[in-house]
Length: 333
Image (cartoon, rainbow, N blue to C red; front, side, top):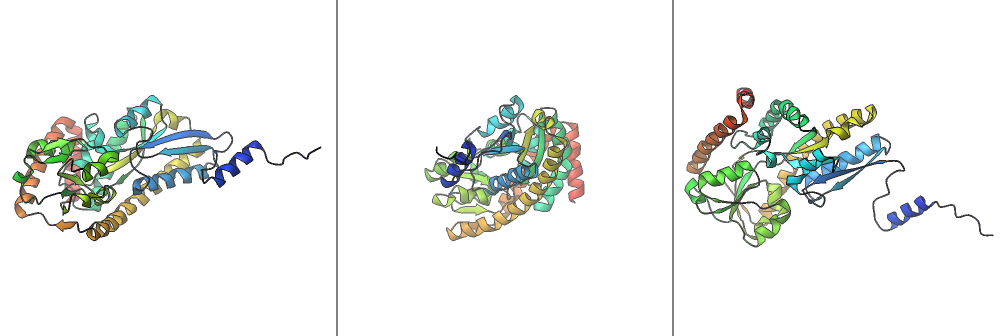
């Protein structure tokens, strides 16, 4: 009679997964959670997200197993919040201002030419966060943390010295701010997803875009676009949310650790954004992308356009949001 194999079926499967370089199986009884993001695993936002969920799994003793679906492999950007609301997924990360049409307050960090640096961006988040959390809770969503991108610069295939130079150019518009800018500057707005951006740059599908240095590297912008104007146009953020119903089902211990780790992930993410900007600038320079200072005329015209867009936004968003903006400008000064 052969001795009983000491390996259980589960242990055998775990060893097979390990030898194949696959992730371990979730713990027995672990609650499976799906987390969607539109960004690739190479982007610092996604690396930070992976670290956050792994730390949470560890702190809850594998009570949960969170699977991160990157690069829009589970849901595209415009479906992540609706999928959270419908309970189709449990967690999701979005580019905040991508939802500005439906939730005007999420456009706060995309108002152009209002932040000068990361300190201003942190102040803006501190002032706007309570209102954003309340607005999201009313939609069945719980905000866990928000992490910025480096400042949005102007990347172009050709030199741009004045506002009139935008006329007729094809401008990538990834949120309401850039789409409205295209309208006001007489450029042609084009909607191009993050996953399609590298091919779009290579194939010369557009002429310019407002973007971070990180995205400029990620999309290999040097294949067509070699002029980067240091404008600090705005410092937008990604926001990680959990469905409110999912959060309500968590144990007190899981909720406590989730809150503490979200604070850490947010602080880590802000540091990563600054570090990624420094590294990306070096990478771009190594590919002969020219960092240009905008002309006086261009900066002046863009500032005027920014004021107009801010007034438009506050008119649409309402009195409470107008007061938030006033509070930010007062404290920033």
